[in-house]
Image (cartoon, rainbow, N blue to C red; front, top):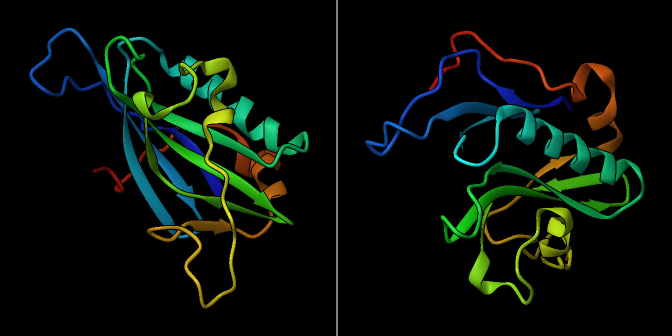
Length: 162
């Protein structure tokens, strides 16, 4: 199953009538599924996001059972939450799901350095029981996230724009 995450090759937009804070459009591809997202450039640059994504993928490769791909972060001083894609390793599979992480629901203040501690514990169940509230995507072989042709943070362009 193919996997990639990156920014589209298009100029930043300025959503919410905010002429000061740009947003970069991105795409996460997991097999045939494509999810578009907007990343605020208020606090982080594109390079900051890409660095965080590489760190998250490396965390799984290094044997941890969870990590998360942050796709929108403006800090707890400017927002109530961040948007991310927590990833959970179970055997040779990675379960991934889009979530909002609300800062006021955390036991400790949010820290980018310890962001993965905010990934909720998950209990996987039998096939007859639901595994996640809205059903995660599954990457059968999580090591494919690190294969050069699949894990690099490429710029995606073409007719698949939002």
